[in-house]
Image 1 (tube, helix red, strand yellow):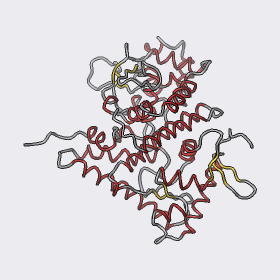
Image 2 (cartoon, rainbow, N blue to C red; image 1 turned 45 degrees about the horizontal axis):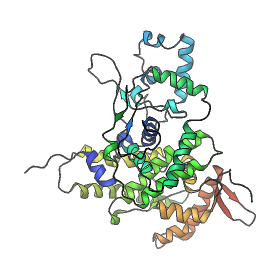
Image 3 (spheres, rainbow, N blue to C red; image 1 turned 135 degrees about the horizontal axis):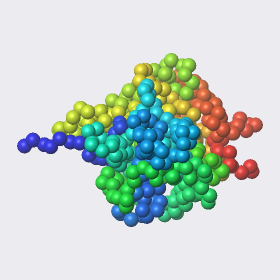
Length: 429
């Protein structure tokens, strides 16, 4: 009896409990998460089994920025004159999501606005080729379900106090007492695009509700809780960190929800000067991608799946690593390293407001124990790396990371040389 072809969506759900695919890599899971948070018909993070959302396409504004075929008569229905058109187009281009490794101008359907304010949040929309009427439709293209997975991890939190605090802080983040001029503009432009006439159930979200109750889910919830706890930080910083933390966490999920024997330690090169460390970092990245492939082949279990289906899952990880600034490049000779945005997200997710953490604890208890990131000597020893590499390499490596954490303003060095990771809103004692 011939088995039916296995879809990559179903395989990803089996392996990771969420849909991780290359189309939805990078920042898209975080943007999708925010669409669920703001679109839910029962408010932020409802506890009910079923949830419906209202989706907005923001297609008029996105086409204004990137679609030269948008008719002048359609623009004139919304904007007063050519000066308004030019000014708003330039403003909207500043609000676009930054895309990695894109050599040509993106189409309007690939153009997404970063949710600096609540009405900039929107769903996927596009115009299918061959349709008689050029009318945008709400349709998944880059939002494949990873954000729905993160949404459910948050809303099914068994810790009621933490869930209540996250909901309250999200509401304060996206619903301030007074809307900004940007919010008024975004809301007006969004109203001229396609949107749901009534809330709708998302079939991918309802397949991502099975929680495992493991440490990975706790890691994500605690990270979001800590990010939101920093009341003195600008809202933009916290929104960016939630988007980045979501992407980083999904990489950790991809590693630690493989069979135990396939778990990998990610060796980070923070200095860029030691060739031995660089080669070890390159090998650990290759090992991770190889183990994902082995895990996929094991999970298939004799069923039929296309090569493109396998590549969709594999492609999610390298693309997301590059977008989250955890590797040097999506192409070429790649290795694990940190960009400042990745360090900022990890630091805010690790340390709650008005607390500080010894740098050694940050390296070992957080980066290594929780994330499986190897940076310093202690982690390298525990990972069994000091048999092949000298301990001084990792001692220098942790100094370079300390410099980077200091550069994002999240490290204090005291007179006795003690290093403490913290955010600037900690009270002086």
